[in-house]
Image: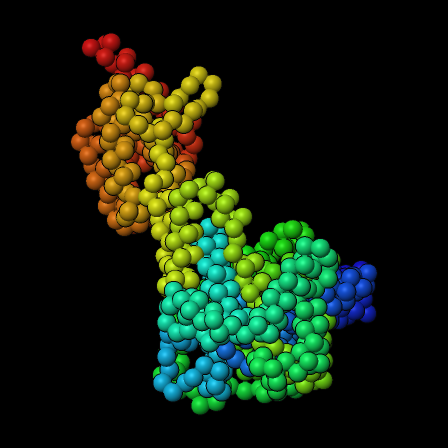
Length: 593
């Protein structure tokens, strides 16, 4: 057979029935959402049960969150419809539950109050339009984050700062529900003024309203402690709704939800939005963007690692972006990945996003057929549901662990928590980001420096303090950080002190560059001054283990002309051996003289 015929045979085999079948199989597989690929029929039963369990918790929760965002109750249900479907289709996480979230709701409400768009009153149709606009802008910011692969931004909120931030959200949201539970008017002003307002109105407490509020809290707590598999929030809503309907709670002065517009959401961009309004809510969208990135990325990553799944944070960001855009065009609020609802899904043995499809289906049934039944639901019941959720956000155990293990970070967490509930949520998230960045900078600024003690069999890194040396005439100096404008002076100063106090006159300084991947311009200038100063004292400067990228950076700064190319070593042992050889040569020359 000729080579040509062999090629034709291979071509026919490639385009034969088996190849076409494989190609069709790959095309079909590409249509399956990433979060559902590799699905097994054995998972269907557990997923359906987990979805039913999650629905019993998620639906009351998102209804309650509307008391935070001050939007119609139906907007809470909408967060479990198109946004959740969008994430299922686009995201990669098998378990992350996307929908209304207390932290995002609190940021949204606080931000819109600060924005103070003229003529817009909380709860009005224009207010709802601004909420939808904020969700759209948040989605756009998330799209940009995906485009530029900015998933790492979520890592800029340290665990201690995030614990403090969410605990502050919990305190604020929980205390905001107290007037609804008591049946008194909500106060105005800052957090302290609002607390004084309901405390001053204790004489006007509505006992029937208080009974519904405390009853809700009691049922939920009882279920959590005694029968944790029973969804206490759903149980409280069903029982107390029946009781309120039978006893005509509204007629007895108990504030109730009232008529709820059911059906599917109206799709489209928010009506009548102006450029000025876009600018007014932009900072709120940015705040929501950061909490969505931080909270959702941490949640999807932790649950994926728990089950040995692959983590694709950037894909999840894309899913969250589309979910928030879906929220915006369906007239609801910002959605987020929920740690609590994801934990519920995991505890219920849910395996994939099929469980969340069950939640979508049940939410659809509620919207189409059951909204009229909710009209007599007391607002105190929703307030009680949100109160318990918010108290759960206050991570007392996490704060205690931080206090025991790292006192400085504990005070940072407390400061963040206090800023969130006492000053403002927007200010709190700005402070949280600032404190996290300052923490990164401080760690780089105070990065440890070492001097390598050359022993007979092994090396030992010692703190770079005056009086240490690697061997007579040699200092091997290591700094475990990038060099930048803030720490470059400290890098040089510590080395100068070690040289000045060395027991023997220093002839060689080997800069171990294994911990330095980059040098900024300011640090480059400082390093040039250091090399010039050492050369002036007849001290050879040697580079050991520099990365090629670092050498290229030093070339751009014209630093390589100051260092003998023969004094650049890729291996630290070779550099030290070169010094030993040089020292022996010097000793022999001195003996000859």
